[in-house]
Length: 149
Image 1: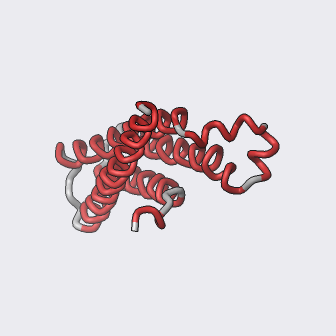
Image 2 (image 1 turned 30 degrees about the vertical axis):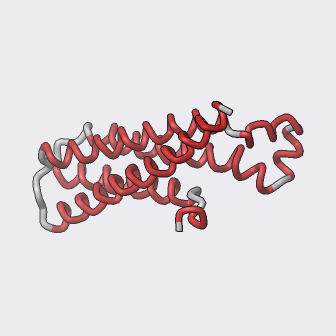
């Protein structure tokens, strides 16, 4: 009973934190676009919101890993790798969703890392904006939107 309660709590946290992480990532992308258009200098505010989005996405990934291993769906692996690959529901939850999310967060992290190597404001905004946008597309592609709406 307590594992089921823990699972439901982590599932809700995962859903709400996803909303927070995606919102922060969208704010960063909008800020980068605005700053590029109006040729703003890269300031502490820009650094902080980019860092917050990065941290929120990493926390979301950790929550997702915890949820992955305590989920009843994890027991689907007991039926074997071949049956997981052949069943589309199993494949989505056990393989596609986690791998695409890891790649999305990795791309956001790469964007954060390479922006630090530039001294030109526009390059910083472009690097963060493009990599965060690609990461956002990957992360949002794996969201079960029917459960959110």
